[in-house]
Length: 104
Image (cartoon, rainbow, N blue to C red; front, side):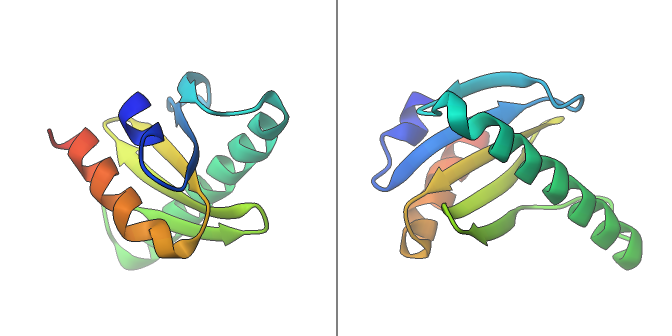
């Protein structure tokens, strides 16, 4: 998580398991936890619906551009990694760092 937090523009990182429990986090203020867990739950519902409609078995990432700034959801084994960052212009840096973390 610390390597992701070193990426310019990164606000916070959150890793949750399939049950929705927090596995790890960095930079996350407690006030944002409920919001981010809600975003992950909504993202999982959208992903599930799209997978069902398209007949897909896997997904790569989901970008949500919300009021607090962009949030990228990425599968990380059986878990979901949420990365929140400052601006959509940082997306390339964030994607690169997430891929390096997932596929070292």
